[in-house]
Length: 613
Image 1 (cartoon, rainbow, N blue to C red):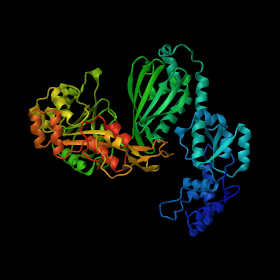
Image 2: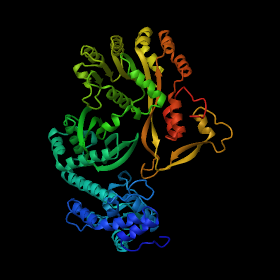
Image 3: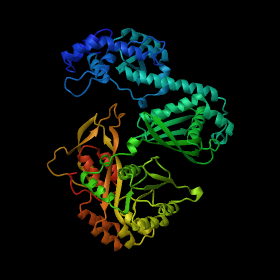
Image 4: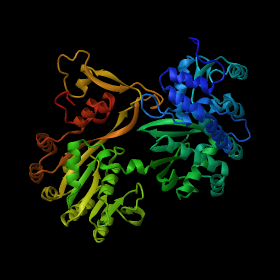
């Protein structure tokens, strides 16, 4: 440690309050109020804690930061209540130790649970979180407990490096990690009898073994933990991957995969079987790909999960795609349209008939835009029918139909049936062939509003793609009313955002020259990386759009069979913002980075004419 801390020994409420007053976080009046309320609040916390399994039967000490944060004291600067994290950061600064917010994705299950026993970690509220320079890094909630420090040195036999963390963070990790370790150990003991035949042979195990694995209680607990944890971490996908000697659990968060857990090899097929059972798949069939659905109830809301399996050389790989209603069903103003684009989109979707297309690669956010738009249009006097493969999320606002190739129920065949169901608005998941395209045109000509998607790089290419599918230009010009191309870019984490400068070389790669006299370059922002964003510098994603309405000038070009370059030139003259320009605007607003703009739009043919994004 450096300078002598102002507090010594165990953290006492009066000392912590004095420190908070000196640091300007609260005023004297708030401090006096907290001292009056402390006793009753401490008793309430202790009573609640005694009902928790994690502390039942163990001596539970209510810490000063725990009491003060629960009082929700208003900050002196009026920025909200004083949190446990803010209190612990202040204490960490006083004792000259680093403060850490504990992120489960940064911690290794084996190291955390193998360094300290669960009873010790629980009793002393501490956690082994890693190694730095051959020293064990220990997170503690009582940084001035010197007896604990000596006990840790004796227990580990290693040099230590202490960091300060919130008690609630430490207790949460103890509960999750040690509980999950116990579950895995139970499952490993029960399923270690599995033979060591080659991985390819393991694909053909008998059904009775699979059923036994899938219903075991330790496996049920492990699966429940993984699903709950994936939701808490805002994962869009969960991957369960069998390897030669272990299994990997990976989450996709903001478009990036993170390895979260390494599982013992014997229990991987059991966890897979449990998830297949939940998804109503055939758990005995491991040689063919399968698809299924799971619905979870969490925090008073339902989460849809789409499951997909695939046989690999090391066993059956399973991917779960999680659909959170709060993400998939957004208000139109939250989708990412700029103000002028949103007005155009609102005008397009308010029309009584015509075709509106969304284009972009898989994972570009088309489903979110479609579902959010349909929800905005849904009302008791409108019949909305969707044709999907597969249905992404079940919602009562629409009449949803699942395409089923085995039942010879294709997009085209379903669309033909839907046209006899008196629809007002039809959503076709994807126009894949000539027949589907023809029925979509027929639906628009007969007075229906049709939404669908295409896989093209930009909006203008959608016209030529439909013509290539066999739609006559004169029919296309009279039915297609608008096309939106979209991509997703990661948003800069606001907790660690800093100003940096765009170089001449970076500007050149983005297709423009920097104006003279900028000195270091064009000021932009980037994230340095922090605990909030797991060191990535990004948190969340935002859509960028290229919205091309079919104006009279565009309609005339389409009718004449013009190519995409002519359409692009006309759209530019009419003020349409390209994907590239939309991304540059996000960059100029400080919402995303050069790397994200280049990744998302480097292949686009349109280029911004200046640096005024």
